[in-house]
Length: 516
Image 1 (cartoon, one colour):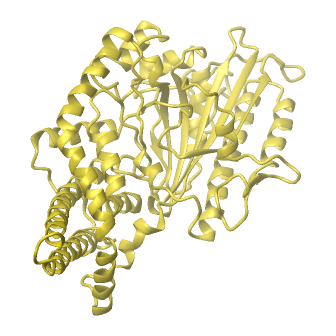
Image 2 (cartoon, rainbow, N blue to C red):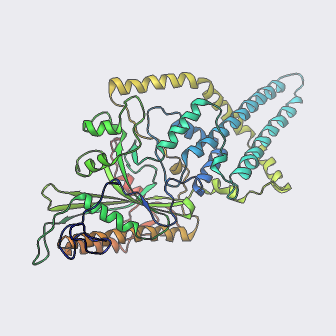
Image 3 (cartoon, rainbow, N blue to C red):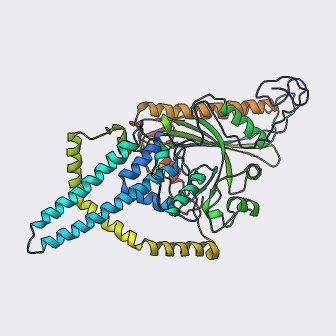
């Protein structure tokens, strides 16, 4: 790469020209937000991943999860939508709407037949109760058969899945809302509702941070001053060159939904919440990112995210990096957080075992399963029908309450309340190699970050002896998972004779209030 000052060649990642000593000029005309992938990664094209398929299947198979997803994501007017790596949320919700239509028809028929059957029991001809029971079983059997072989086998098997063939909602409002969600799902701004900021990326599995004296020069040299932006760009470029398939490096802003109506500076609030009576923005532009990097005390925090997606979207490790340079330019704070999205639950992955059409044995199992599910289905159907009947009135009261919280009380939380990918995640690995790959993804990214940081500081004549000690401590205290791959407080420990560092440990540190 040529120096902009003298025109002579240097190494691709040089910071100071080896010939004239001038700083490298970093061209940010294309935006200060590096969104780059290694070979094999396809940012924004999550539609073909296994995670998307499995979530589509989950909403077909689990009516409770489907109702929750549609209520907390599709039906929200003012709250943000949280995106998850490897998931095309709009496609998933299209299958959810189709499942809800089918499930509602089933519920109405089952409850109606239950009422007829009860009427027969207390009539002069109770023998007709058997006919009502048979009719109820037939409804359950047909609905189960339709779900498994009409949708799952026909559309969601690995060799048949095509997001373009997802069911199109007939309701105009639902179609418009899905279009909005598709746009929000591709943004780089996360508005979270609770304590943990990294919503949609799984539980926090590890964290570390340290402070370095960057005013201490190597012997015989003077420190070359640098900015957080220069450090950020150098680290991003180094991780991008890792060469690991599925690596995505991007900038993302995290802010609590509690803070949008207050506690933010007016320009930042206007950028994130341009309209108080609408959902927050989904994209942080270059100007906002640059401003937030220079304001470490702002409640909206920018992070350089290093995301490694494996197993066709079924396993995702994300590293969140943040750099803060003191006002005196003498201290550098470095923070890293790691999140893990485990595989989707096994019962949602059963689509991979379905044939194109059921065998006689499978039909028999479905028939027995349908019979066993009749009684629970009646009670669940009554509950859902009552919810449908009361939904319009409940929606009106909900909208009035939220508008009051926004315009009068100023207490509304704009944060997303549900991550569908996290809700469907298992609490254990499904393959031993997934466990090893999680370690590999995290450690490769971590090592590249530490090496790049050391090189950057050395190029600026900063004494890196303190960093070397920190690096040794971090790299030698990795997270090792045992106990048959379970992700819980009893199975994750850090190093020999070290304290366990788990998702539960991080949650235990959370305060009782909901402030992020």
